[in-house]
Length: 308
Image (cartoon, rainbow, N blue to C red; front, top):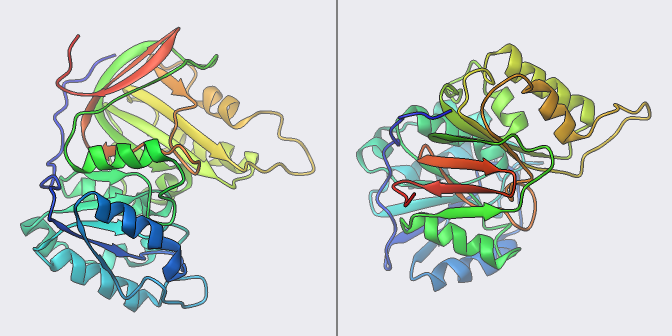
């Protein structure tokens, strides 16, 4: 199954000397927890600013909604800033996303970087017609050197090709389309909101952490009921970390749950992709057209144009 989709608009790729910022859009964290990431990003030749929300605290959040919104808004509006890194995920992005004014961003687009709870931000950005980066955040950087290198390549505009060994549940095939997705819970949470994206003729990727098996099933049922799984050109299933089980066993693994709900579809499915709440968390430009090839002996996801 192939698609002739076009990529969304890519903000200007980074170059040495550019200024980037780190803000905390969701849950709180200690300022020192991003020190290693600041050094890493600076080693790429970038200037790093840390926003007021990093280190702020309002119960579980990194400052009040007003603090997080103001910090994010100021950085969005500044034309000299080329990328905004969310310091971590957790919870809180969807509380403020509909109050953000994107006029400055539309005039001077920049890369928004993060994953997990930041899925709500990615959806909003894609609906505005721009790409964003699903990848490691400052709190999770330095967990895996290769993942940090992938993030640098993605932000500096390099074409990427990811390949890994096959999984027994994979469904072979080929698909070309915009890559979209993120955290499964946030994708379903966004249905009907301004962060809800069109899944048709897209390569969808999903991941999650800390969910009960029955809830993974419920989330997949919701995507299916909403028609989100019907017209994909490919599905990438990332890591489901720290999965929980009730006293009464659910009877299926996370991957078996996904497999059940996409059975009967004819698009390729790649399981065990290195993306999610794990050390090896490979970066993707959401909204970029890529080619997914799933064979019996391996999986390849590559930027276009590519050499056949």
